[in-house]
Image 1: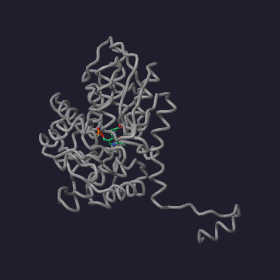
Image 2: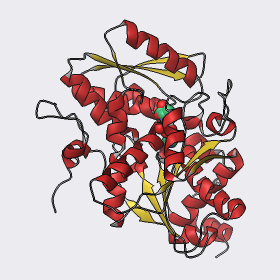
Image 3: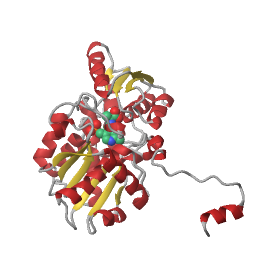
Image 4: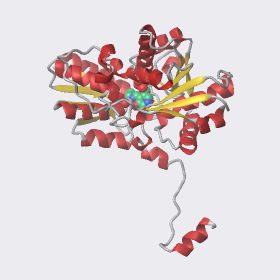
Length: 353
Ligand code: F0G
């Protein structure tokens, strides 16, 4: 077995790096593409449903693919510090890669609206964590202004190197399937990832590695669905805090991905997200975070209300982050452990054996 070298070394020919670029890597990428037959049976028997589990990246989300590029390029360009706004995962990833590179990291997060696991990561990796009394959109606005005025590199997805790194997930899916999927379902927040995947699928197609491209189907949370509504949402709200965003930076990229590929951007309610979140854990043994489950909720909605998919279709869902990021939401799903004395007889009786 050859050891995985991280996405920059593995996909160097597709990335804007040279031999002068110092590669800052935590060996991100190479995440599994899991065939989800149990889940498919619940949704549409015969559907070839695959889950790209990005929660298995080094900091537990897809952001690491973009961050290895953004931080490597920042170091190449002589940066001493990086900054980002975040709903949590970007801050965790930026903090980790900055630690690896020996850079200072500053992260701006919406107070009280990021999952506990993500906050604990940023703190442990040694970032300067600033909670603001505002939402992600406010934080990104401030980061843009600071980045324009001070010598600090922005590592949000408005940094083009981020999307370059993130597009490698599409390459991996094509390699893992031996073809491109028919449909790609993906959660949409700041809209960078859907933009990146579409770029990746197109580049792989143009390089002759695959002979088709998927329809890109993006999913926003109903309380934070500016692209679906066609206007920014001032006070976005959703249980899926990762995608609680009212004015996505890559709005145009997402619309373009949907349009060019023959797909669409739609929305799912928090109830639909939570149903999918629980279902994938119980049927497949895969624990993703709530925002990630928007892609599966999208498959369920597409089958139930759109009649979009049929048996035999090859569908990939990106599960963007790990469920352990957000233990509070999992615990609030209402399954309570039973408490008993440390006594075998009592336990056996309670279990009904
Ligand atoms: N899923 C998760 C788990 C995320 O953390 C994000 C974005 C998305 C989906 C949406 O991806 O923004 O590229 O459309 N999280 C960002 C953050 C905003 O700050 O961590 P997108």
